[in-house]
Image (cartoon, rainbow, N blue to C red):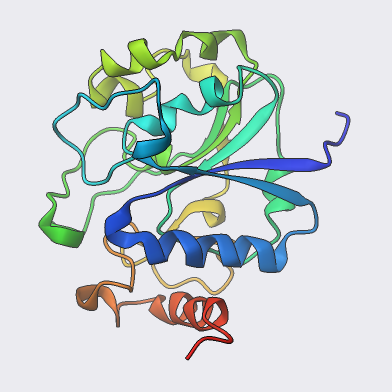
Amino acid sequence: MKSLNKINLVVGFDQREAVAYHVFCQTIIDRATLSVQFLPLAENTLNKYKEVHKDGSNKFIYSRFLTPYLMNYSGWAIFADGDMVCQADIAELWSLRDETKAVQVVKHDYKTKAAKKYLGNKNEDYPRKNWSSLILWNCGHPKNAILTPEFIQGQPGSYLHRFSWLEDELIGGLVAEWNWLAIEYPENPNAKLIHYTLGTPCFKDYANEPMSDAWKKSYARMSEGFD
């Protein structure tokens, strides 16, 4: 595959944990060896998409599926939740693009350790939980052309988060290190991307949980030069 010289990175943004978005982007910038184009998935910037779903623990829980649309159904992009820290070169993930797949994800298979997560949100178990929190999108794949704003507005979360518009063979896998679930999984210093799915350490209830030090160090790095 011909190498692309720019990585398209769509990052979930929720004003209630805006600091998490900025920390995550800092960790990407610090380690990237290719140019990265960031697109914050902020609700107020999605002019042609109106969120009609009433459930969800964050503001981008459904709009993440707009990624192919936002890329004009062309090329590739990465979607990532904003509550993450990248400890590797994002170009490594970019290099895993497989043209035979419509999406590539870490195929988690686990039961949660917590009934609630940040801001008191329910944390239920369901099939393919957290698969959609890190997606390597083949935006030009014909199967993803169905993902229009209107279509996404009309689908339940169970359909979207389970990638039900795709045959299983079109859902490629990634190693777990690219979406390592802090607290839910054992501590792993070799995790390439730490996902604070239960709560980013910016929330006091999660400030001292396993793997929180990586986030705190990244926050300090982002804050350099500020009093």
